[in-house]
Image (cartoon, rainbow, N blue to C red; front, top):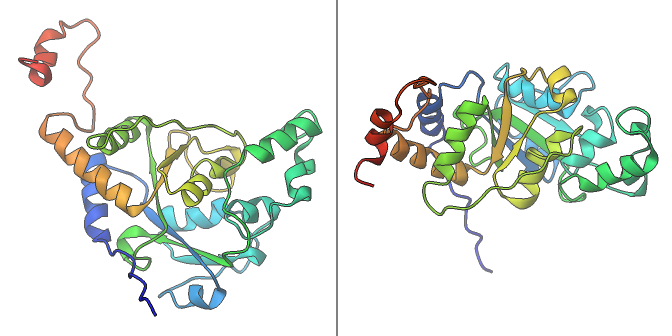
Length: 261
């Protein structure tokens, strides 16, 4: 029998320290991991289980805002929308119709259906549970994805770090409501870094501040971004981005970065 290669382990506390040093983040960087069974989930140290029904946004924020390690199954979530994005409920015809959103987020049934079809979600049937935990705790090593909440200024430096080597143009979409499908749903489904503008529900129920965006990405991509940001910092391209002055002669400032180029 062929042995499976164990998943790559990361220096998660070191990565978080680097990330906070480079970006001065205000919000705890967390990991998210899906589990095939509730028994596997229960083996995570210092696991908290909800005693009430929540949105997935609230569960994620218990880790990012409170520093908790929290595990859930479908029964802990408020409805099919939260469950389906992470693959804990079927994306069946009833779900695709999105009838509950007609007259709330969309004018008619056609628009509601189009929005549901546009969501990036984890296929149903593989997982029964999810755990979120502060990345630095190391309780999920490796997590399936890391979640980084940051301001637009911090986020562009993170993206620049991802593009330092192996450049690619990132193209992300905005589904509107249920924007968690733009972030953790898409990252879990595709394995690619996924940026989102947290939606109304994430801000109302998950407590995400107005100024924050969310990047979901695999730990290997986060390590790549950190290495890239360190290289950029050596070139003087770092956060915070100091305003140069809108009426100043830019040549002195630009010559530092682009001298003899």
